[in-house]
Length: 455
Figure (cartoon, rainbow, N blue to C red):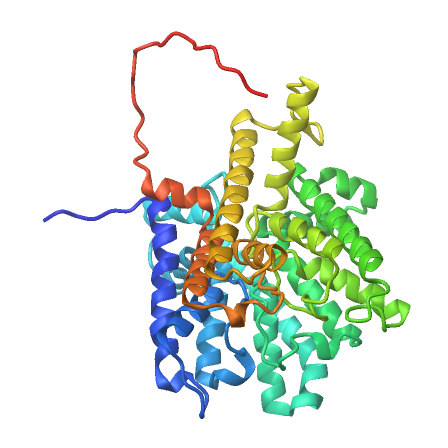
């Protein structure tokens, strides 16, 4: 009898697909739907996909359509999707004290997108501990505002749900139909959400390097400059890019929406600034909204496309092509134009293979966005290019924000967005590898170089 074995390239996409299908079946059960509502299988499939892919686009209101059981299923799917199915399964094995084979360690290393296999189980324990602590603190801070508003039971459940959703960058909430709109003047809720989103989006590697660097620096009384200098080049790059993108996005949103009465126009200055930062952060794969995305100006939408497409950072819960990937792809282009082969970042050489991989990921992701935007527009001729592009970039970058398009999608449109969310979570490159036979060909035949022209 043939024994089936899967490489990480096959197992990771299949694990996400399996979780989506199981989630869809559970959400299709009558017990998952609130009294007075009905759920067809496509709605269940869409919701399971947006939960596992931590996207946040919904065709029905999470707070009113689903029962508590259904909301628990959504929350579990979001937690699994945020950490990764392989990571969650490995955590379960760790808790039950099961031994890891070398093959399982390799798959876990690939799932966590790590470069080295040594210490992967130790990293797994730190991920679990860090996730529990951060989500628990988030729930406590949320409950201060949610419990007085919704009552103890509902408020506490909403606090737990929102904390997990924000940290996993899932973008779903159960506090009301306007997402964070009702809290756009509540600094505690908005800053708690921003902190959870950023922490989830930084990536676990940055977490551990930054925390150990600060603790060691305090212990040995290092200056802040020396602490920064001793951080890894990856951590410094991620923190620098994250800071630049947050500030650039906030300044742009504030400038473009300052006088728009449908968004920031009627808010006092301090509230405008706070909501601009919130929008800048949530656009990078979180999906919470403190004001209407439909009412944003065209300039803000262009900035939104850029921020959503880039997303968060590697080895975290966020989506998008990732900050480091986008930066290295841009660096590759700049260096080619300058005819410079010194690919240095913080005085460290970046490998040619990594630069090439980053450029391909950005190129394939861009092509995917264009293709799915055209497909979505073909299903509804009344859908404008801005709305369609916003929807697809949001889906493929697992953001979850919408210009009030998701609930109006027809059957074909919903299927297109489901596929876009799935591809966005596992990555277009992973899907290409999944269908490819990655065999090394030892071909000794040498071909004469051809003359081709570009430009």
